[in-house]
Length: 360
Image 1 (cartoon, rainbow, N blue to C red):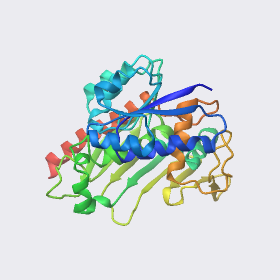
Image 2 (image 1 turned 90 degrees about the horizontal axis):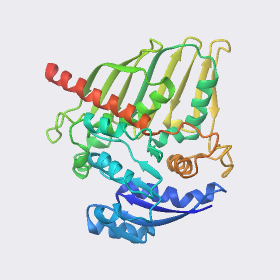
Image 3 (image 1 turned 135 degrees about the vertical axis):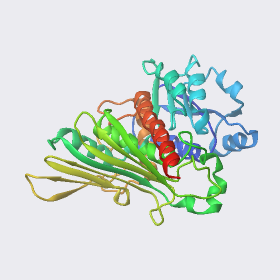
Image 4 (image 1 turned 60 degrees about the vertical axis):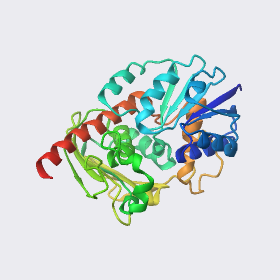
């Protein structure tokens, strides 16, 4: 297999996780390309130089140098939200780059959505960083949902909750994430993952009917939602439900969960038991708990399927799908999926503004 020359646009915390995932692929999957970490770029010279040294990149480059680097085959866009669209357009113009991995969100405005929609039919592979789709339990739950007769969905609930932003010290370290929606805020940062899962299970005919937000700190712009909830209707089935995202839900840790109730049964998942999903079928009359563990077959049998998976394992699998595009792959979030998530994030921001104007 050919050697792939990799470049990183971004050298922050999430870039460290991606460097770990790329360096780990060879241990899990037998057929993997040779990966060469060629270049890392970030705004601050100190951060990109240190990142290159710490994680084995050949060079640290400025943005202008990076986009002129003709040796790169694959680029991971990992910088601040507000520059994702700009970076994607620039990297897409790099003639030798054939694979682009873009961290969510794909962009921050309607104009950028419209500009990026022109790249949906691109011959280059563009994969969006919704790694929770690649959790072993989520892969199996999606497959089971699509292959089992649950009947039409009736109602649903999705949520992604954190608590860390209750602490002033934590907020102070992450001011760039406290910008007004849709660039910042809980729905853009956390809720986008839940929206991605909701779209994977229910499809693209989802419309927001209303939104609310809560949580108020003097040091946080009111336009940057700390907690927000949207109500939705699936126009294809008539199902209704809600999705909420929070940075200020005490005691939750890192909680991602959903429930879908349909005419003939139900399915649910909770990240505090991330190696399982559960389903109920009216004909059977009882809840069934399905263990997934580290079972990523048919792609790999290492480690054994009974071993707990962990958060980073899904990112490793996502990178495997990004680099090799194997047959029988699970749901792979492309640019079209990312833009659909962003549409709902953007529409949430408009509904939240209406809510604030009326009630705050």
